[in-house]
Amino acid sequence: MQKVKTILTDRNEIRKNLKILLNIPIGYFMGYGSVAKEAVDKIMRIPAEKEGIEDTPWERLTYLDLLCLIDNVKESEKYGDNSGELGFTYTNTEDYYWHLRLLYILIFQVWQDILRMRIFLETPLKCFYEALEDLTHTGKHLSEYREIIRAYMDLPMPETAEDGEETVGNVLKQVGKIFDRGWCPTYMSITYYERMIKDAYDIAGRILVDSFKYAFPERFNVTDVCTKAHILAKASGVSDPFMQLAMAADPEEERRERLWRILY
Image (cartoon, rainbow, N blue to C red; front, side, top):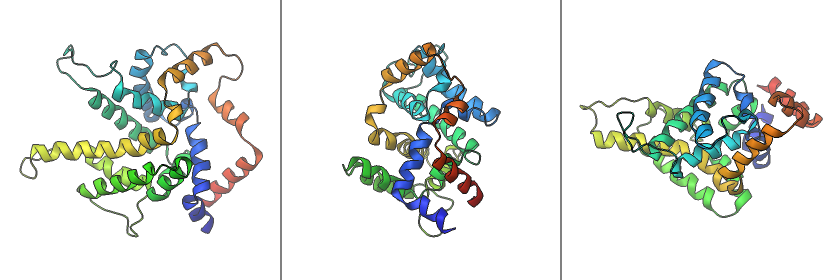
């Protein structure tokens, strides 16, 4: 059991796990049930069309590329709809929240089957941000951690960790419960309710997307991601994302993977 605790808190091991997780092809997630496949399809449907990569093998892009495309929804004028053609209007931010919700569904659909996602969710939130801070040395991640904890504790939480050590997964699960809350006029004002929902989505976005954007800003370039998708469309060779992972694996990592499956 000590081994499990070590890899969840050791910064080097956390970074190694994140490196593998972030480079898993999107198609890999789609193999874990219809809900996971539908979530990925919905996440990619609009970005693939807007960015002109719908006819490319975008399933061979990585999880980090997926985060880049989701992040781009916040800023690009291609997203949001102020025309009212659908009978209502929505902003970039609302579009972004919708994609975050789908990402949340995907993560909690696959976390028990994909070991790297499970390790990520069971990592203490503070250790996660400290591990990323070691890459940048800017103080940004530690500042983000403090702000997230303050915002998190301001939410109406049904439960918190007994030892006070909130994990990434625990925070996201509690935030997810806020997503599903309906408005009860006798319990809270509409202003408070709207702020609560917004704060919950902001916390999810900061953990799932912004944390990696601050750590790997050079990888959050949507033009590069689209160029990569078109190159993959022209490339020959291995096309199966499962085979790509197998070819990239090394014996030591495979040994560690088997050990972790035994420990879990």
